[in-house]
Image (cartoon, rainbow, N blue to C red; front, side):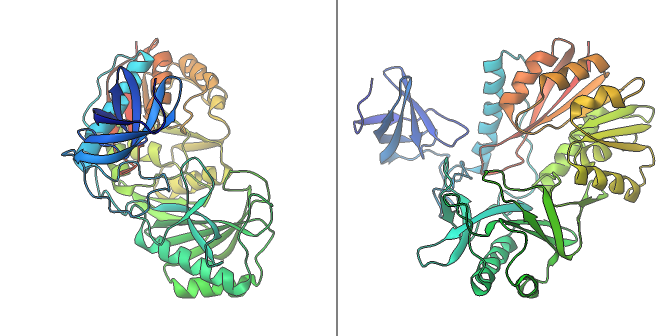
Length: 443
């Protein structure tokens, strides 16, 4: 089909969610690294598989009208697949990504225009930086290169809050000062694995993931970091001694300041523990939750169940007027946050339970008027889908961060429900990810 290193002149006719251009040569698909839909270019084949080939751009003959110069200078971290296209085309492309996922799954459902709110840069309120040693032998931070655990060291990140990189720099400098070594996946030795940072209206929460029970000269280390960044309101150690690519271990230790972070969404205040899920894009999250509230249209007599409820944000924001709100979440710290958040915001009609979402049948007594699901990327298990169908909520609101698992689950759920439209939200600008919300009603 192809021979490695062969050159071809092509027109890029599409892009995938990895940020690669797509073209065809003699009917065979070629993925072009860095290619943008509309580019005319000469490409060089660098990999040949049975059903496709991968190429790099040898010469860009005519740039696409959608092409822009990337803001970010780092090319290998693999995070921002769409740095080289315009924001307007990114939104169009993400609508197409959702539509294509539905088409592959055999789901016949219109897809609305992509909604976006806020800034395309510096929007992330959370960062998780792996650490390692740079060429000078100093401890440094960055991101993993795509499809590897090689750390690409970054002085800054164009999609996170600007303060995050400065805090991470200080942590690395103080680690060198106090003899805190970087963890090595190869040897299993070393101490500091990840620097995790979150921000909210109360300040910044810093979590250091370590391969030890404590840090060397811990008090001095933490004091120096906090003194350099007064915005830090709480510091945690997370103990992870396992040989795993999972970032967090089970144990969090509060070593300075507040044990939660506070933020505000849709006029409500939420406390967040370091292990709890919370959307990374504040402004677009508010837009999504407002859309969810509009779709649900809760009048005040309904019982609403919120699965994968996290710290309670979706249920409280989208179903403020519910007669009764029931939340289920598997992370114990998040459940405690949700209970506390209900009190803070005056939800005396809310109950929260710790467990897998499949326990919903044992928790719910009586009719469920509306059920909300906001699962992780893997989507809904068959057990959860069966539980939903057995409970028979009148309305089912699905919030998804993966169009492919959403399409798979819709294919199963739409045997019992109907839907009018899917609404995509660009929750993760510059990356290949897209959030989608669908309201289903019982047949």
